[in-house]
Image (cartoon, rainbow, N blue to C red):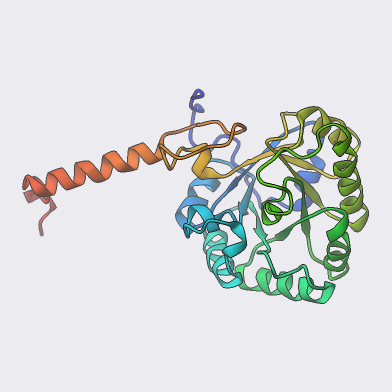
Length: 277
């Protein structure tokens, strides 16, 4: 646990956060990103001052209960993305393009991205992959869209990567470097490093012209992102990756609240006279 900020809304943005605002902070002022999947959570994070909200395809696991992120549909992502945007306040909202909606061709990628942004009101799309996906990023940029890349461990490719493994150890670091160079050359506005050795992420961040966002990539990236269910222990007994830290006990508090409600109803203490009309 860490100390609670002096007030809710620590460093709350007073104007709409733009991509250029986050790019301007590279190298001297870190910023925070969290996932969100509904209006209420996005509103809470906005009030806390979170600069950037990611509508991640991790919703497949934590919202819909699917085993893999590859199972979430375009419509499911669009519905939750629109809800997040309505609650996000001044935060920049990024939406993941789900598996199967951008890999086939540049045309498919542009159609999926433009439709997603139109349906949700989000500001940027994110897609996974480095060298192999760089042509899609260029096509999206040529269409005038803001794009976040994602390299290192890419969950949509978990089967081809041989499971949930750190990417870029030893000689494999050359591939991560090549992936970053490719997405930068393609025009990506920022890039997520997932499960990459901290030393490698630090070295790449130092020379990378766009903001780097770490998740399991050490503390030297320009920003950090976590799945909020991990950050706030929504599932008290659930597995959390090594790179997460628990900043609150939301899951336990919710269970306690529900149990207290049940007890009050069962014992006839709720509703009380003061709750009646």
